[in-house]
Image (tube, rainbow, N blue to C red):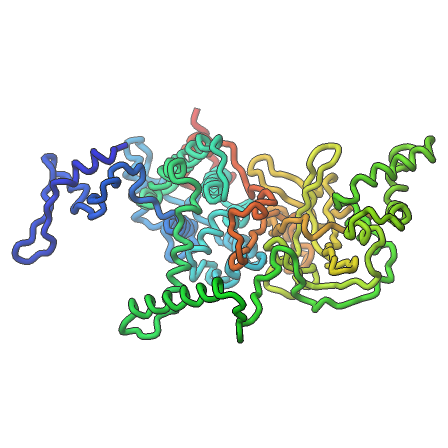
Amino acid sequence: MRTGDHVLAMVNDLHVIFGKGPGGLAVPNDVEGHAPMWKKKSIFWDLPYWKELEVRSSIDVMHVTKNLCVNLLGFLGVYGKTKDTPEAREDLQRLHEKDGMPPKQYEGPASYALTKEEKEIFFECLLSMKVPTGFSSNIKGIINMPEKKFQNLKSHDCHVIMTQLLPVALRGLLPENVRLAIVKLCAFLNAISQKVIDPEIIPRLRSDVAQCLVSFELVFPPSFFNFMTHVLVHLVDEIVILGPVFLHNMFPFERFMGVLKKYVRNRARPEGSISMGHQTVDVIGFCVDFIPGLKKIGLPKSRYEGRLTGKGTLGGGNSIICRDGYSWSEAHYTVLQNSTLVTPYVDEHKNSLRSKHPEQCDDWITCEHIRTFSSWLETRLRGDTTVCDELYSLSRGPSSTVLTYKGYEINGNTFYTIAQDQKSTNQNSGVRFDAATERGNDTYYGYIMDIWELDYGHDFKVPSFKCKWVNLSGGGVQVDPQYGITTVDLNNLGYTDEPFVLANDVAQVIYVKDMSTRPWKRKDKEANTSYDEPKRHIVLSGKRDIVGVEGKTDMSEDYEKFHEIPPFKVKADPSILINDEDYPWLRRNKQMTQAKKK
């Protein structure tokens, strides 16, 4: 790697007069006839510390991801004009001329291009996707179903496609070795996009991106490899120096440019308009923050208020009298079970049961504890003036009048009931609950049926979700050993005796159809029936949205409360698998299987 002193010495004596008119002076080629690496000396070299910087110009990961996405989708045949042209095949032939391969080995369907049937499945999967509020743009708006093409892709759309959606949509499509290389690249981009990157995985990330590029060289024609593909190998070294990608990404700057553009009132003087608009906002902010007793007039209440602590959004907080005493008791017990104030009394009650029923087993003690604990706690603390108000309110139990909602915002997430989800363009009903059990930590997946807000009096309300949970055993939850993808069977439900969970303790997930588990169509079955639906769904993590919440950033302590589950993880080296094939750039069916290299 060149040092700052070395680069400064290369540009220090450059003298260029730009232009083709009289006096124009170009930079001459070197002694070997190569074009010069630099054509001018940047003014930044006048800064005394510039040559000491390890990174003087960071890589724009946002636009690298966008250009890489558009390039890859073009070769898959789902964006713009096809890149699988005769010229590309000729380039591939010239690349392998030294291997003495006959010209016919460069003819035929490409292994990296989706077939017509695969495009049907690919876009059917994308069309069925519904993402949470604030996750991305509506997927239906960026796909053209009649032409089976992507359209109107923005930078963030490309980021979501490459880090989340593409491996899911490609599930079961393309030859396995080609698909493995693409998924590994997406897993690499997902890993470097995280808020926290473990330094111990840096060597693995370097190896992963190298394996991906080697695999692509064996499959794609030379036209696939442009400058944007090359700079991927430098991203990890840059992360070691500058930190995670989000610290030096272009997204915040692009958003702020959108804010500045709105200040323009006089199009003939855009710079002055931006300056005056920014100055006006600063003055108003100063007045609001530092003038005591200032009351806002005509300004609406911030819609972000309560997004972290919890507030109902849809349904209007309808009050209903809970006539289902069993569900009411389950919800109340869930609140008691998760309260640190109540924890000391749990052991006391269990010990009391064991002393009264020494002949009973632990399972019977647990069931009896769940059934009688709330009434025992109320009797135990009745008349006790030493306990705090919150504990005393918990012991008395909530009101039988329950507030119900169709939507609820808490921890920066927007949650819906499954009934509301079916009417919405978003999917906000999927939840994940991490529980500590005797076997260790278990992760439960489910979806919300009802949203309750229990009223314990004195402005003390506890939101809870009534959910249906997927069985952890019996094929309910599985992890793909090759891709690390978690899949669930939403019809394999269990744990009906524990439906409630505190709204503050769940993370949001997305369920996407796993098209590889869809049954083969039969002639005696009609299309678009439940028979054609995939048997399993892929689990992806949702995204918390705290933009606009006062005093909170995405580095706040409570922001990292839930650990995101990696959507996919590939341990195998796809370049080794692809190198075992004679013609990895061609798609071979069973009748055209070629002998493997020995």
